[in-house]
Length: 395
Image 1 (cartoon, rainbow, N blue to C red):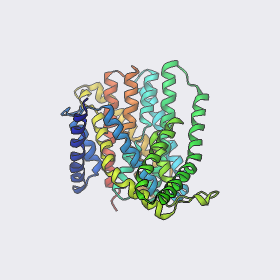
Image 2 (image 1 turned 60 degrees about the vertical axis):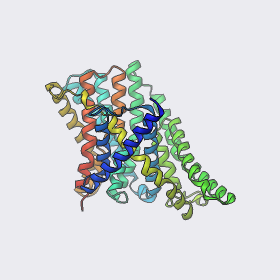
Image 3 (image 1 turned 180 degrees about the vertical axis):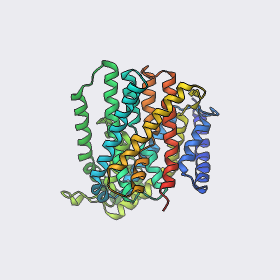
Image 4 (image 1 turned 60 degrees about the horizontal axis):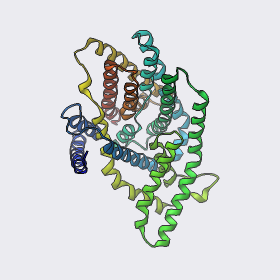
């Protein structure tokens, strides 16, 4: 695709995402839903004006990386520590229940092959952390206890998703899983989360020091963004999703972050404000592209809505997809409203579910009908979750 065409596509995406997203907000709907809808309309599901491509995918990834960095900056680390066990319980239940229930229903009730059933279960484990945190942020709920539980659980759920995908890949190729390799992957990811905050703090202080020595604040924006990209790269290198590296960097550079054994590394208030001031304009521009791209990836034309088999498979798997995630909220203490908010926050599959679906299609695991079913389930969970959260979040 030629460069000038990419520019035109970006102009259309940015303009419509802002207009439609803000219009949805004024009408009382989550703006992120409008941005995804823009992608659905412009993409292969409807008009086919803008096809998914590697350039847009890269820009979309930058958008969600900046979003997670910003969420890390705003996260209350003390609150995250207090809800750590609850977040772990939600993540564990929210990953294992869809995996086992999806596999069992597919294999025994729908009588699908075992490998196919495993992939359906694996696809249902996904939670789109980008969609979840954006909805809660738009609703102004990120400071609440349930949102901190969701944030911690969504981060852990993404890690579980990577491990599940790695295991499924090996199983589909060799018919067995190398548990030693998966164990090493877990250790690499754990090591990253232990040491990366220290490295991020050191880099933050170095940026601040060099900025003062050079006598210019122009030094801060590019070096902060460079730090975010570096941690995204490091996260990928240890087998973790790039967005989790950005989130970790944001946590480490936030004004609320402090290590008990290294208090001298605590971010000062002025530096934290500069970092936040740097990232906000970039996030406003880049993040909507990510949610439009989620819509562009959906191909609703691939779905045969007249097929009885499609509806049988879809409704059963959709029921499993909803129940198996919502039930995770009932494993923490709190009111019924909080339990439902946590459960439905874990519901959207978004781009993570689409990655599983595409992997299954390319590997010949899904036929056309099953691929359409998975796309339908991903689309429905992605689109209804913001609406349900909007209703539940009302005071």
